[in-house]
Image (cartoon, rainbow, N blue to C red; front, side, top):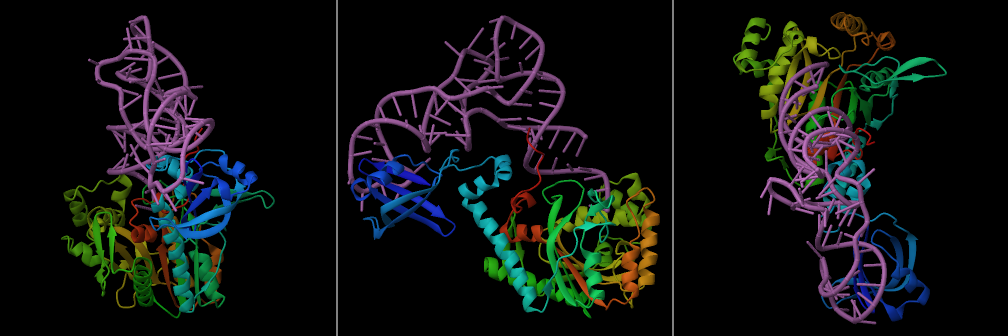
Length: 426
RNA sequence: GGGCCGCUAGCUCAUCUGGUAGAGCACCGCCCUUUUAAGGCGGGCGUGGCAGGUUCGAGUCCUGCGCGGCCUACCA
């Protein structure tokens, strides 16, 4: 990474994934041939050395090189050593340079790797097994999002990159895989922003005979465990905010959130519309048709950014939770929660709806609502699976990229994805 | 989609109201056998994002386009 020549001798700093060490090379202690190689070495070349370890008079651990081998020649010069690589665009396009030059980037991605390892370990220890389900779906499902479309030539059929693994994972519940998780990519054909990359990594887990409450417990335990193991702290510094993870975490009913804003009955469309106007929530004509859209916009604008410390919002209306089980005690509501922290949504979980008739009805209602949307289809195959009997279960989804952002204090999802999607440069 | 900002050497950045594009690092040559942003002397390696326009003259002013960043909107 650096060379300091002093006539008959030279100091070099070299590094690999294990760290950095200084080399000391003397003209008279190396064979002629290797000296010739050394004279043509550039920063960025990959070399192997043999020699004796000693300490310089400044106390630095150093290798007195006796043999040197050129393992790989660098033809393109690396970015400058002192200022490093700053250009955001090049950092994303040529992430390998970012990783070589910027220690923060390298540390951040090491953390990402550790976070994923730790999640797997945590879940494995609790008896979950990792499974992998299709990423190419004949019918997109499991979330409300626009899919990417592709085509299989031999079968001559369109396929959709999955927008969520949910419906396949629950088919596995039917097949008696009782505690399962998948950590992998989902794809949504929507806008790109500091919080959205078209492909993103999600954890989904399902626990047969569990429910929403179990998911809450797991979510809290998992994130606490990550905070301790990754950052060794119960607080997170995140974008000028301090997130306090001390337990118990705050819980609030979805409808209480709106009651707190003066909407005593969220079914009262006039009251909701009035509030939206007061709070200057911008609405499209389409939004105005649907009270849930308006409520969601109010929530996103006024509530979400203020949920800094972890907060569970729970008990959602059935209308916006088509795959969740209705609450026996609260008609019209489902057993579901979402977790917010640092102003971001990080988790979504519910007691899974396992009644095929009810599920079918909800699918049909959703299709009816989306008359303009040709992509919306009823996944009859999934309904059929439910007809064989799916155990009651809790299910949880966590957006891994956002979780990594929170744990590494990253300002953008692009900072935590090795190769975020960018328009190709001409 | 809209607003603002950026794009100059491999990298980090200068270039004032328009007048032949220049520093550091990296690279090449020479000196120097314990330096660590080593140092000294010498060398500039460029389609100034792209395309037009204004002008005697454009990196600089104007228009369009491209790519990116931030904000915002849309989608959900």
